[in-house]
Amino acid sequence: MAVIHRTSLRPNKLELLTSWLPSRPWYRGGDGEPRLTKAGGFRLDDPQGEVGIEFIVVTDASGADPITYLVPLTYRGAPLEGAEHALVGTMEHGVLGKRWAYDGCHDPVLLAQSAALIEGRVQAQKQSISDAPDREVVASHTGEGPIPTDFVTTDDQDGTRLTTPDGTTLRLHRVLRPAPDGPLTPSRGVTGQVTGSWQLPDGTRARGVFAVLLTGPGA
Image 1 (cartoon, rainbow, N blue to C red):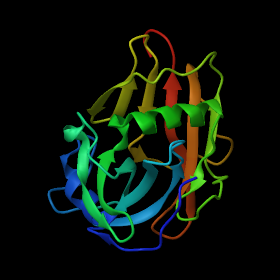
Image 2 (tube, one colour):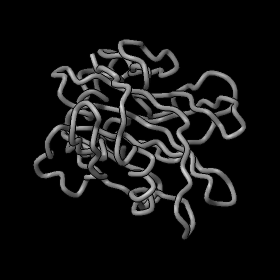
Image 3 (cartoon, one colour):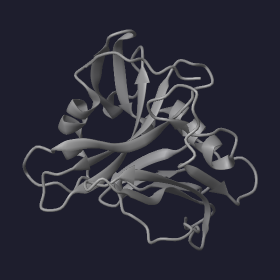
Image 4 (cartoon, rainbow, N blue to C red):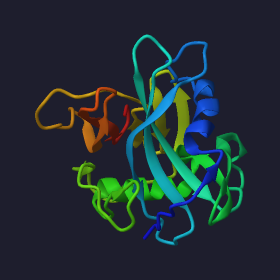
């Protein structure tokens, strides 16, 4: 179980993301610096209790229209070997000391727990409360057998695609869009899905798809 500490972070997460987001191919902002606010998110527990796993949702108000992004992050007490390219930045945590923050799509702990979430073996946890399930995050899986996690991660203008040698693909929706009212039924060909909610700039709640899993050639 992850323990949420009420303490300081220097720099804080939004400050880290303000510098990092414009470097991503899926970032839709303009030439100016992002103006970020926290809009939601959830956590997953690391079974070993070593790595913090957070899916943070932020809204950027720097452009003509607000844009909301999904950013999976992992927090470690030491550098992740071979993941220098995925480092978002370092922070000084008031309780835990120096923490290395990574784009979680390149962290094997987050990938394994994301597969476990889709399979229904673990439950999403509230972002800011210890040991509290987040019922707004809903995962489903209709595929057979365990989900492989030997993903190769690719970022493009459409988001992040994680693909295994057998053709299994996890597509992460980096830019979030509210779905129409009603059940969020997986599209044809989708064998797994994660949906969740976040807060819009006007204070209302939106719901949409965070990630979809496709299995087999052509996924």
